[in-house]
Structure formats: structure tokens, C-alpha cells
Image (cartoon, rainbow, N blue to C red; front, side, top):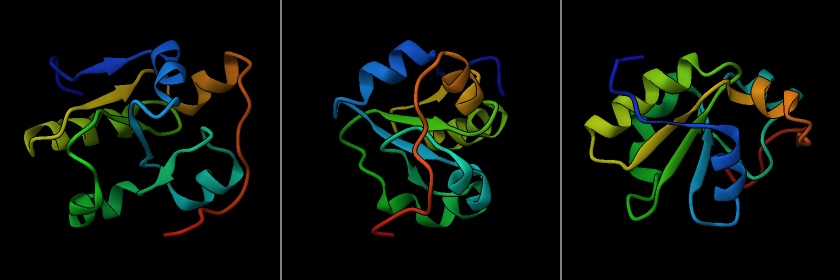
Length: 110
């Protein structure tokens, strides 16, 4: 993560799930299937650069992964490409530690 990576905490992520922001999970598909933040769309890090045109530039984008490392790197890429993107500090692990539920299973509609 660069020293200027925009980052949010789990509380901001939870508040953004009301539709204010789009949430993408840049983790691996198997990690996503095992458990992800409810409503997060799967866009693995390995596919992100080739599919950024599928993302909405008109609202904030919250980027999550298992621990926050991959999401930080992908947030830097998104911000450099003109997106209002924020890495979720601590990732899905922090979400789970906070006692919030995970969705289990494969993505739908992609």
C-alpha cells in the first residue's frame, strides 16, 4: 500500500452497504465462496485491470480482500484510473472479527 492509499474502516464499510457505495472483493474466487462481505461483487485482483470498465465511476467504490493487502494495491490502481476508491482496512478478516455475518457461496450475475 502506498502512503496515500485511501482507506476506510469496517464501520464505514457497514454504513456504505446501504447503497451509497459499490463493494468489490478482489480476493480469489475460492476465498470469496468461503465467505465474503454481504453484497460484495467478486472481481479478483488478477482480473481487475481488464474489467474496470464494468465499475461505476459515479459512486464510491469500497475494495475488500481477505486481509486488506491486495485491496490496498488495487485501490491505488483504481484511484490512479479516476475512481473514488477506498481500501477496507483489515479486509474480510476484520469484518468477521467485528461479529458481522458473511455471505457464503459463488457470485451471481457475473
